[in-house]
Amino acid sequence: MIKIKIDGDIGAMMAAEITAGEKAVTKAVADAGSGLKQNWRGQITGTGLGARLARTIRSATYPRGEPSLNAAALIWSRAPVIVGAHDTGPIIRSKDGFWLAIPTEAAGKGTRGKALTPGDWERRRGLRLRFVYRRTGPSLLVADGRLNNRGLGVASRSKTGRGRATVPIFLLVRQVKLRKRLDLDRAAKVAQDRIPVAIVANWLEPRLKG
Image 1 (tube, helix red, strand yellow):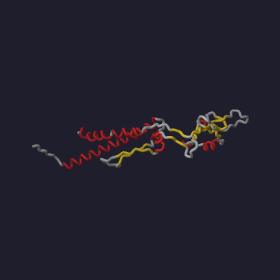
Image 2 (cartoon, one colour):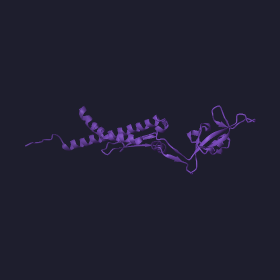
Image 3 (cartoon, rainbow, N blue to C red):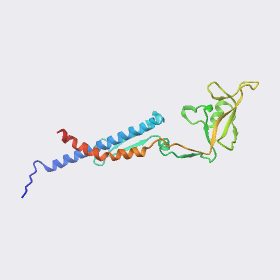
Image 4 (cartoon, rainbow, N blue to C red):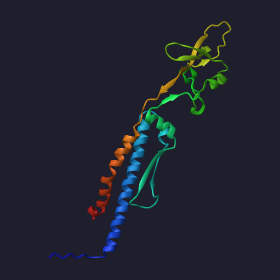
């Protein structure tokens, strides 16, 4: 006959084990969330989308401020439309069903990083844009002016017509297929698959140190 004797308070031992488990799960989930946030940020900056967009990626662990066997991590972007577009590579069409106006280098940049529209350009340059239909390739919005020394389309000051040119300012297309530049789901799955191993490691670490 085998006799088993348990030294100590079994209730206290179980409570201590649960506490250890809560800490192990919470640390594994928090580390996975933090690692995934850094991965997403790295993908964004690595594809040339910029540090500003990368900083929109945030993470949080729940419940806040206490360990739990049901801990969960949330990773999100404060610019979900932009990040999501580069993650899925959607087809972009005009809202009114007509043309998408894509600025050329001669158009210049919009103010404060905003997209430059034909109306904005006309108000800024004081020139009217003219529609040029092309059977092959994108149609155009052009300005009858000149290129300045920075390669921007501006009004011509010549009274003789010297240096005047028809400058393409916008390309007009029906739709644009945005290239998929990110793979956020794959990184999330990798992070999730690593959590069980991390929980076990975190649970055993105090014992191994002891």
